[in-house]
Image: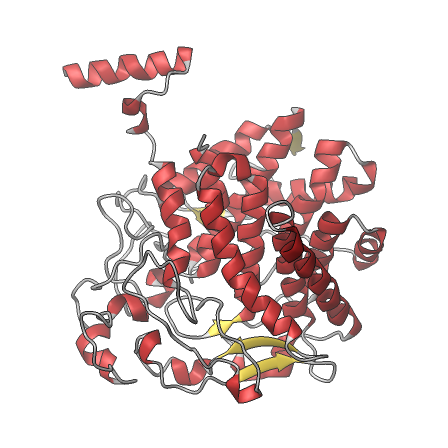
Length: 488
């Protein structure tokens, strides 16, 4: 045994027994603090509108006239992934998850809490515009995805139609309205102490949007068709968003109206959590009152949250979740890490609740403790950060090896500073999209769709199912990374 490994072993032993914060020990774990900072910084690369205080310097102003076709100001917000479209359904979910992470793990985030709030405010400001611009209308997206996807151009050069989409009483969208209400309600709690006036505006707007969601029932996919499908169809229907929205409004207001509404809605038995299906998230959120406060009125949600965990845990008799040989949860072949990130958030959060009250539960004859959930969550976070068969981090700019050819227009095309002349709609394909060269701009912190079921990853720009980042992957993974970073 070398002297280095001998010293490392002694230090690890010492740190286990006396709790010293020894630098060598960090080598055994990913650098969660670095990953946390980068996972939040990523959002600057997705910004639409007029930019300020920009650390990701290869991005510039874009889409400065969004909303003009409807005579409203809809500038701001985030592009969802590697394209130049603003889809409010996943953007609102991203905002809800970032807000939940900032509420649940605020003490562990340290100085990054300020950066997380900045990221939340960027999308919340946009969602407020969408909800308040026109009476009886909720704007739900800007940019024609079918036209945009035929181009490979920087957001700064964008010359495609910035079509404006909305839902209304005659063309309802309970799903996107329910999620928007959830996002505004969650964000209102983030800003309650640091910006009370803004917080009150957020919650007032959340209540109105939720009323709209329940008064005019219908799926936005049915109202908007090819403008949102197949990209962000509401495949699971809108009931889950009404439950999710009511759960967040209940937490933000403690108004019995939302509790009674929840009781009237019933539920489902999911084994997934994503921008499309929110039931599991709502159950964990609502279970908090049962686990932490022993409030019996919320026991049914605790039971549903635990049934969900039993469908996720690998050794549970009721598990319906596959794992790769490398230990990664594998739900669906397209952008699997989005499901890993969202479900891992629920694992760390429920583990946190369980730990506070030493609560345990059973999956058949398997006894589940807070440690059971925490270990599985850590395995998923560590896998994403490079503890996997390929020794590749799936977070861009983190660790020695990470994806270099991500499916992202801004990252793959030269910046305005290095290439001031316009790169047109089709001009980006031959020279940049199909190039085998690494992307010229590093989208620091972006978590991509990830490996396939065999732990393989091609790092191919054309393979968007695996190489495209998305706001909702990062929005969900920030919380779990903060949980393990435990920044003081």
